[in-house]
Amino acid sequence: MSHTIADKKALLARVRRIAGQVSALERALESEDDCEAILQQVASIRGATQGLMARLVEGHVRDHVAVHSREAAAELEPVLEILRGYLK
Image (tube, rainbow, N blue to C red):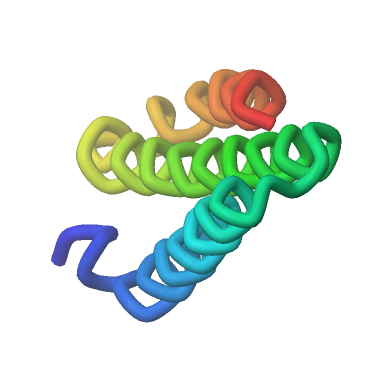
């Protein structure tokens, strides 16, 4: 089973939160909110999408790349840790 199927509920919840953030950004632009508020909203959306990407990449690597041996899975952990830090 694919990690996206196994984590479907959590992934969809993240996507829906991101959609809500994008809608709020659209409303802020339409109502000509302050630049600082708009920039903060964009930064929040960026963080949310990067968090989603990190989860998807980690699931993919665990389920499709390191599935063949325990040694590969163990050696993969430091790489995933670096990736998590990079995508934050």
